[in-house]
Image 1 (cartoon, rainbow, N blue to C red):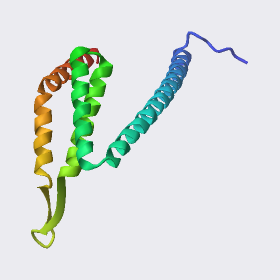
Image 2: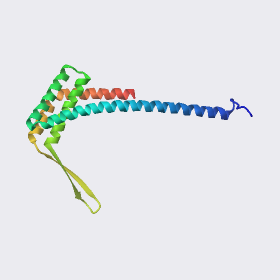
Image 3: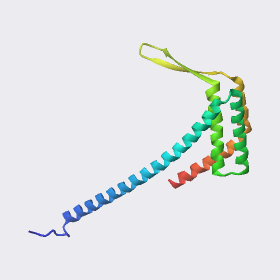
Image 4: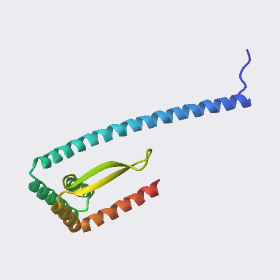
Amino acid sequence: MSLIDPTSLYFSAAAEAAAQARKKETEAKKAERKQKFSAMLKASFDAGEEAAKVSRTSEIDSLPYEEAISKLKEMVSSAGDALRKNQMPEEMQNYKEAVKQFVDYVVKNSYEVETFKRRLTLTKDRIICRVKIIDKKLEGLAAEVLLSQHDQIAFLSKIDELNGLVIDLLS
């Protein structure tokens, strides 16, 4: 039986290919473990966040119309004041969530979207969407609240822009 010559070109190429395959396999396993952990972490965070959001929205939906509007307006104002006093990430997140809830409630309760199809030719249809404003007072109030919170929203947009630039630099 002949021995394998480690200096042969074929053997060194085969050994190198096997080593690279093992390296790729171990890297893939590490990446898979990281993805599993980050997916579990994100799922647990999203579940907790979703439960809190559902409880807040169900609480607001159970209130009468006028009380819900005043509560949401107060939430936006208090979160804006807290952000003005203390520019911490938690305060920014709370403010964003309060504004999002307010705008979602306004859109859900003051606008109605109609969609219908209009036939142009035998083979072509056009889908038309019409937005009807149900409650003009609510729309005016939303514009007023967002206008009064302009400074905080501008501040948040600048911070988001800077975060985007930092992420761009890191990638």
